[in-house]
Amino acid sequence: MFIAHLPAGYLLSRRATTRRVRVALLVGSVLPDLDLLWFYLVDHGAVHHHRYVPHIPLLWGAVLVVGLALRRAFSVGDVLTGLGVGGLFHVVLDTAVGHIMWLWPWSDEMWAIWTVTRRFEPWWLNFLLHESFGLEIALCLAALMVWKKSKQNKRLAATVP
Ligand SMILES: [Zn+2]
Image (tube, rainbow, N blue to C red):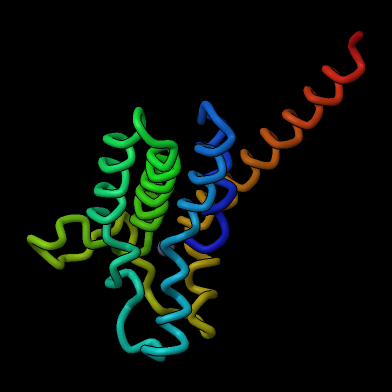
């Protein structure tokens, strides 16, 4: 997924009960792609970045479980819960075309709903012209509509005495 992680995270974060969880969820929805820095700057593209730890669902599942366990006693539990949900959501969305190792460490087989074949140059054009990109556009438009409606409702609420 290229452009819809943050908009999709925004849509999901609307369900969060506190601002802290909402922000953590938004951060978690994009955090796994920080491994692109390692991919480009250190590995120079030698290993698909979805094989790195930040794209392993088990990591975000563990963060979520720890967050839920700590949630009642420590405020950091809320943050970890939001990060875990956001990170899991990220890898779920990446599964559309991104190939994710859902069963790691038991298997390093990579799973995806669609496989994008290489037909165009540069490489990213193959993803933009693939049918799965419609999902990204739909998520972006939905987030934009929800955001605009939210702003409109806040403006209305501010004008009502
Ligand atoms: Zn990703």
